[in-house]
Image (tube, rainbow, N blue to C red):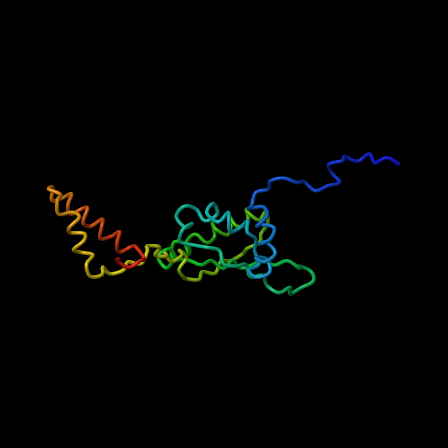
Length: 175
C-alpha cells in the first residue's frame, strides 16, 4: 500500500523557532502548577493593566477555589496582584475594569475578584559600576608629572581626573 498522506505531516516541523514559543511551552506548566496562570497573562499584562498601572503592578497568581458543588463545577478565581504602594488606590478604583480586561484576555469569566498585595514591583537596581581602589603612594605624583606640562587649566584638570579614575578602576597595583 502506498502512503497518500502529505510527506511533511509525518515529521515534526524543523527549523528556527522563536525562543518565546519554546520557553512558553516550558514555563506554562510550571506557572500553572505554582501560580495557577500562564505566561500569556504575564506577557500581556502591560496591555491589560494599561499605561498608568503597567509599571506599578504585576500579576502574582490566580487562586482557584476548591470545587464545592457537582452542579456548577466552575467558580471564578481570585487574581492576586502585587502593587506599589503609590498605585494601590488607582488599582483599587480600576479593579472592575481590570477584571473585565483579564476575563476578555482569557475569553471567559475566569476572575471575579482582585486581591491587592502591596510590595515592590520594580526590581532593585544593581550597581554595576566597578569597585574603585584607592591610589597608592607615588600614583598622585606620577599623574601630576604627566599633566604638569599642559598649559590650559581646564584641560589639565580634566586629564588629571581621567588618569585618576583610570588608575582607580585598574585592578593591578602600581608598579
